Length: 68
Ligand code: SF4
Figure 1 (cartoon, rainbow, N blue to C red):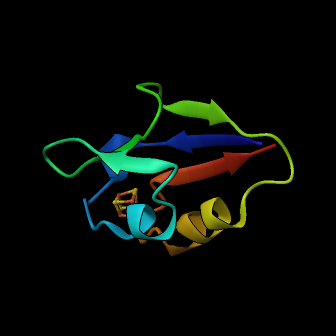
Figure 2 (figure 1 turned 45 degrees about the vertical axis):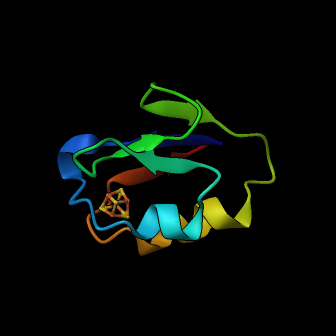
């Protein structure tokens, strides 16, 4: 499944990194990035790790998108 982050929508709340610290990280200004990639999209093998789904659901601004 494709996981996409949209930095323009991110309000630097920190929730996604709290829920999925192995996947999400932040730039110095608090805006989300992937921990292991500078890209805005990362493809994860199914089944999608539960922590990513939780981060997706908790993001208050929908700055994280999941696509098949
Ligand atoms: S949960 Fe959403 S708004 Fe909060 S830091 Fe992560 S991407 Fe940004």
